[in-house]
Length: 207
Image (cartoon, rainbow, N blue to C red; front, top):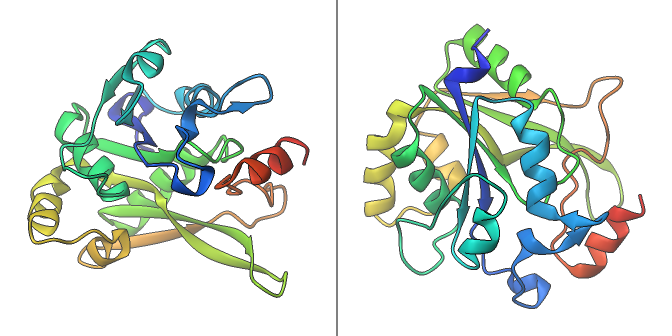
């Protein structure tokens, strides 16, 4: 098993929040505290240290007591900009990424990603979890913002983003990646449910 102290957690809170009316998603209230703080408390149990990638309201995020870093790429370039920022700042052999808007992600997320990475000798471990399709059927889908990465992938990601690449899947496809399903008995079917709108956030709060 990869020791927790060898893994740095990165909370991705750098988006525009456009589907939420432009609000800073990570600072929206969920069961009495900001979404990103829920995420931080859940992630801190699983890793050696945590940092936050944010592009607005930096002092509000800094008040959570961890380092906060804005994107190293301009113009809200998406989650890969957060990955790149995290890999540049990471001082451990591994980085794990989680978004700020999925407050029920598994408490054994990092352990299971790490076990699969080690078992398969992979460079990246990516979570997959149940999601409802347009017909309401539950399907297991990859969750590319939930990734455990070897920190020596920094050079590769730098090249990819400098070449204009912005899709997580486009980059991870260049590397040995193991997909880890979280659909076992006892797994929360809403573990990867995220809130893109204020209505979805309220619905998740009541579920």
